[in-house]
Image (cartoon, rainbow over all chains, first blue to last red; front, side, top):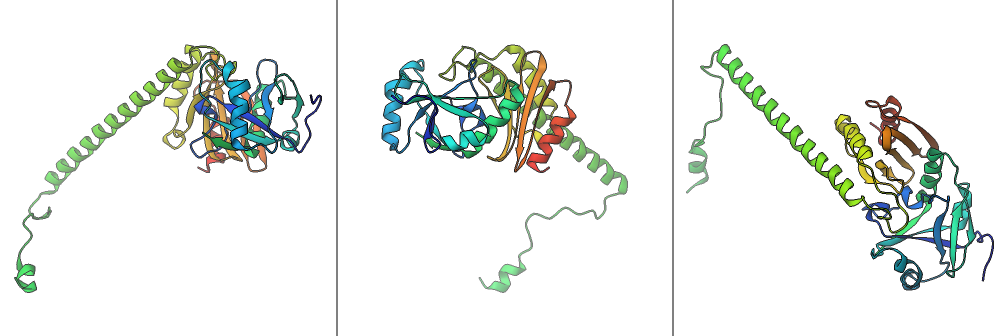
Length: 127
Length: 164
């Protein structure tokens, strides 16, 4: 079980169950990377995995906890990009491959800025 | 029928002409046209307001329960929606094309988007407290305050991003 910080070369996936977390042109909105009340943004480490495998992880570990909502797509971002905007990521298992993006500023407007920078580097796979 | 014969047929509907119309009559005609245009414009504005109101009512309805995003999003409050609506209807037409949604904090979010590194996001919450952040290439800006009318720094920030 990997522990501690996620390596720079890893890819982090943020699953989207809400249509307003991405745009019609297939880009990711910053709010998809807003942290929860604990200051964490939940992601899965999916480096090198095919789309089907990424969806399988969601089906096994994420979607069952999403109140019957349907997976609409997922955003991918490299861990080096996360660090590049002044945030960080560490493993938080179980479930396997689960990690959290953390280090958001306490000030909401500064947090929005970081999320904006991160979303600008993200790719989106619509389902 | 030869080409020359077709050409010879006069138009069946004569075009309007000012011949034989007094200046006074033309002015009255113009004033009627202006009045009609004013009424149509008012109707259009009313329709836009109704559409906008419906969009905000839908926001409230769709985000009333906690966790609406599948994670731990807070429900949107009627106060935040009402204040965001007031802000939206006061926006000049050039700024009215923002995407409107709710964020996980239960605030109404306006997004003016050009491309991923050129956008302005404004979040309006309970009590009219707002937060904004913008990205314009290498330039960044962010801040917060309380909505009272149309905050100048918001308009200026949006204008810089959408290039108006």
